[in-house]
Amino acid sequence: MSAPKSEYLCKVLVLGDLGVGKTSIVQRYVHNIYSQCYRATIGVDFALKMVTWDKDTMVRLQLWDIAGQERFGHMTRLYYRQAAGALVVCDLGRAATLQSVHRWKEDLDSKVSLKNGNPIPTLLIGNKCDLIPYGGHSQQLEELGQQLGFTDCHMTSAKVTTVYMIGGGGSSARGRGHNSALYPSPS
Image: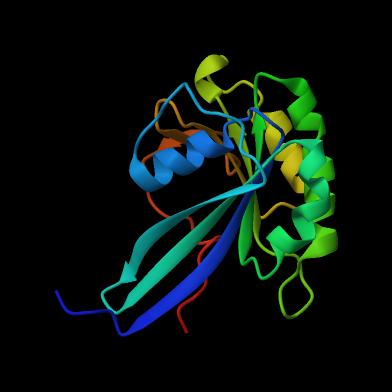
């Protein structure tokens, strides 16, 4: 296979409260592994995922897994700099993490934007959907996402590699793939 003609680097932030599963989502996506034994992230952790966009284009996703503890909040401006997109993760089994989504989105929008001044594309991710009844919280998550201006919303489980698309007539299971909201158009 020949080398791609174009390569892009995209910094994607992964945000949310302590214990919502940010590290698990990153590890599942990048390395296809899951562990129940993660330590709390201190500051920020990094992962790189190479994505073949098409036969001529390679996208390097640089995932910044940012600590959810309040004590690291003063560092976010540095961490957010030059981000092309973000995931805000909540735990569907913990109502407090759903309530703090507003704070994460507001903080993100106040500290980083696209060159044209618009907010960066941001997905709302409801994690641990394997622990709630099928379809539970999907309407609440969708309404919250629309209210706060998220690009899209999904329910997932890093544990069982499931992603549920929300909206457009209800939730439907979807296999792994890429979501164009996080990837730039290779033009």
